[in-house]
Image (cartoon, rainbow, N blue to C red; front, side, top):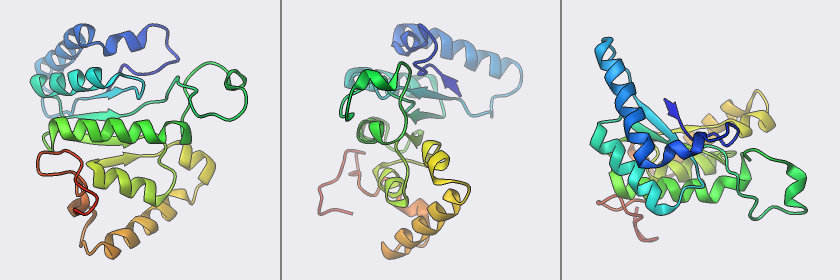
Length: 196
């Protein structure tokens, strides 16, 4: 995984611009190939703070270069929607609930752009089984949790698993894989509320 999205490393996020990202990913892919690691999956992790046009550009680049997937998203530098003094939380990226909505939007945008041609890993604001379920139905092949685990404790994965299993059964699926992208239309765009 190539992570060009951490807000805690000065200048790193500048590498998300396609002009800087293309040579970096080309070099990583070339190195993996030349060292006999062609089957090693190559993914790029992006920030939720990218403009929609930049999300599209990264998606197009990932397809062009034959990447295996995209991780959407890392932490956010946005302080939008925080209660109290946003400066009180300090510098750096925020995880968890503050980026839940935007991470989902980025995931939906990626799914509409790439369909099922890339692995899409959802991260950011996944704290409950319903959060994970929403991401899966939006097109996530996999989900990643960190803040949910930190605050949910060591039994959080078990609660997530049990909750997702209930949601899968309630939706009439025999496996969670059948739900991937269920809320996206045939072209990957979000389906109407009455669909799927």
